Length: 344
Image (cartoon, rainbow, N blue to C red; front, side, top):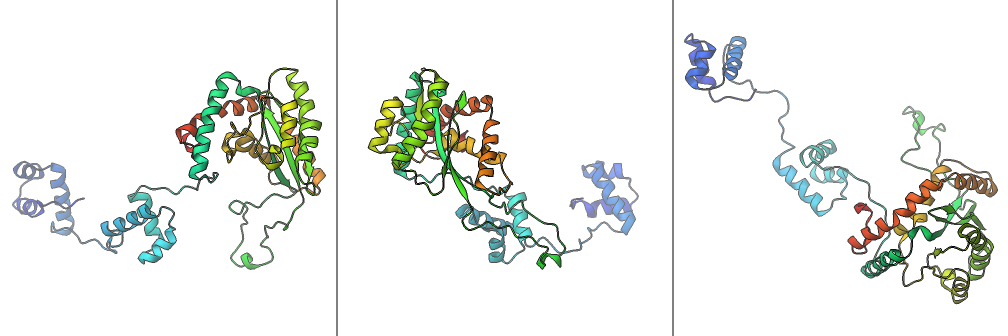
């Protein structure tokens, strides 16, 4: 009950024999206030407010809250532990102020490509060109391609890989070690998708350098061209690739012009843009998720698992993923070429 300034008057009138309703009428206050004060008089013999026991709220003060707010505005990545240490107060107090008083919540940093001002300007220009391009051509006709390295053992997730142990066992051999070999065996995987299908997975061994000759023969001519011929059956298609040195050499450009005309050249496809390529922003993640947590004895076992996972990706997912590209292009334009996924 909040302290009432009418306590002395209520006590005086009550001791004169007036009832609660009459006191409330005379003082023009609520009857509930009168009843509460009268109850206190009957219990303790007096109406004065009892001094509360326990430590007063001296740490979470207006000044402390203002200091914490100012520091967060200056650096919103500041550690709560560090702030508590600097202010000489408990971390729980800082956490309470941040959560309950300042109404702030801790969020993980979003992952994204670093972009210089020059890169942003270039992305903005080319995203506008791509949107114009896809007013004439269909985004569903694009073959989106990329490469990724897969290893025979997964990286440990230190946040989720835990053990329930007693304090004594926490320093004993029972505590398992999450480890990875320094250089685990791995394989480079090339792949591509359209809105209506998937290319074969192309495995390139670790000791093979992907120069222009390897890219042209193993990827373009031996695998992609036969698949394109069968899948599109003479219909139109557009090849997208990043512009790694082996992809943009004179000899590779000659192969592209001869067998993949209409590919997205450097004037259209922006560098530093994995957030625009379905392989990067979705497909590789899905493929990793399907084999997550598994340790493979050999690279061949890894390849077999990737083949099974690749075959399980359905056309509905491919269509939805590819159709999201134009939305991403518009978001990139809205963000002026900067990271845009928060706008999606």
